[in-house]
Length: 180
Image (tube, rainbow, N blue to C red):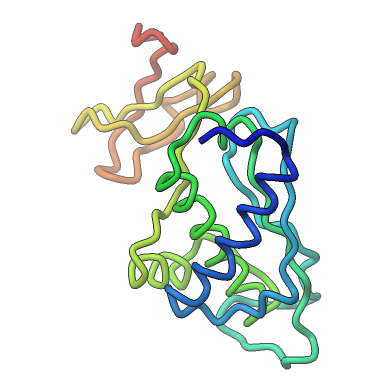
């Protein structure tokens, strides 16, 4: 989706935040939500920025007066690469994080997030807009279980790790599909 400027993208984000909060029935106080555009992000399409409350735990509600502010950030490159429905899904994903931040003072991708995302039909992860340097595959079912954009312990020593799908060993391929 093309935006002539970051200001136009922020305007779209503010509008869509209000629309999506109402349409999805999210328990989000939009007065405590800011929006931002990242010109630096190279892989992640969106982020929820906030200061976690000390000792906060997802599932343990906080007092209304303690609710932290949160900033939903979308990557400029993602906005240019995605169509409107995909970009809206990225925003919805981040708003589920905001809902948790405002309810619990912290957020994660744990069971509560997955349950809420499933309930709303929100993607559990955001699509990437750049190609990974490495692809991790399950050696049992052949499914893709991860992407890496630079060398890391998983790429260097895949035999030390197991796939989440089958518990099998991992195979590493470079970005062209060649096994390492």
